[in-house]
Image (cartoon, rainbow, N blue to C red):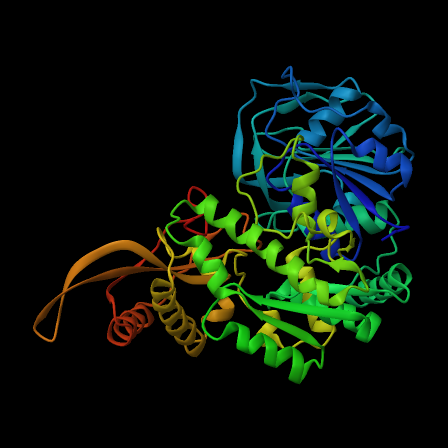
Length: 513
């Protein structure tokens, strides 16, 4: 999708890079993230309205520190350097960075020396978030200091003539009180952006692009029932109507009655044709005896491709395959050899286009998860579907720790159903980013009805998060945990112990496998 107005965010490996992009888009301006070693190609191919240089974990003096051509400062557009980006800007302009400076992490009091342009409307004393080991010790001659802190006498600089700005703090994080105002000033007052990036404008452009790409052809959409595939299917149907074929495969590792609900919703509520395939036995046969989580993922992914290929034969006139690929997946694949490290692999439908000779349609490859939800709301999809918690591609197979079979899955399905039912009743569901149960390969002794039991333990997990990149364990009320434990143990045969996971990410991941 071509965007005549955009901001280029150059990634130097900061943990906050995606957060910069989210903030810029929340302010109504389209932006893209490009790794430092590829960014100049994108900038020269389609000149942006402005450039933001991200932070990063490196020191500018390290031999292998990420660098970008100095041409980035000669494009005739405003540039904002954040943390490492500020230091790189100073270095390119004959400033100096002190690697032995006093480190500064956490909140600091920003004292603004000039409340023009970048800091217009920002309080003279404002809380900002610092995360740096190096600091500027000398600014380039054409720059001036426009803000400082007690520990950083050079905390923000500018070259007003060239519209080059740099800040030592992170305006993109929520801990910086007026970060959005600062970013808004850069986008609108300095870059002269017009804005207008919103769900409705995206939908209108996406429908136009889909119709132009598909013509009178047909599209197959693999429908899991999750947020991404649901919104993608509704968007495609609005664009091309009956030229869309949806296939839903029950892989045997879904939640209780999930497939039934998916079929009913799409056929009865959305009036979108849907082919239902029950392949649960095939999946479970292939998973039999497998305990390694990565093997589980690969088996499920490969089996999905196998089943999908077989069922897609019924739609021989289809020339396109729709996938719900999101922007973070695209960033991760582009950055694989760039500054950002991959922490965890993700289940996807990769490989299908090559093997099936279908052209890929990925309407959401430019969107973050929250943007897809907003598109879904704009399309009129009920909140009960849009606000669902994330659910992994391998489903309950990676929540049954150890060997997977139908009996263990059915047991976990019942636990999961009770868990979600109770947190919805308590009004906690929308406060929690993701909640799920895990069946542990552990049995313990219990007493029920004066008799000894030796049954499974389940762990309940609930986290709060903005995007899943970091997460904190949810403080569920004790009385709710008590009800959950009582219901699960009383109603689910085979469970006699319930525990609650209080680990945050990092160091733990959200899923157990």
